[in-house]
Image 1 (cartoon, rainbow, N blue to C red):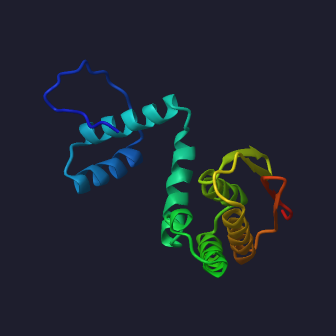
Image 2 (cartoon, rainbow, N blue to C red):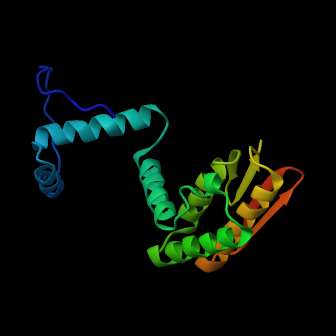
Length: 176
């Protein structure tokens, strides 16, 4: 996201924020060595750009949460790096353990599974189901991903049925 340049004079307007929010923003801006004015403008500009692109700020927060979980579990490079079926299952167990200990909700778990599956095909979410088509990897890799997601769900204590059939990955939540 672009950063504001100080040299450019822009027309300004006034707005109000709650004092407790202002204090939190002030601490963050101090840590970054920025003024509250510049920091707030950057935050609002970034949030506005995300909204204009169709991402709510809560969706973006979920994406960052998911990315950090995947990176911590060692899954960021897994689709590109291959590995054995056992490696993928172990990665799934690590992911599920992290999700469980982070207190991830079913919705955030589904979003993380969708992020993983977006690497291999087009993901369509229907409430408690994910359907993945247009797969861009071979069947053996798909089967390993299915096993990994199954292991992640099991480790997280989430009831999930995940299948690979007729060229589609079908994932459904089975519990509450």
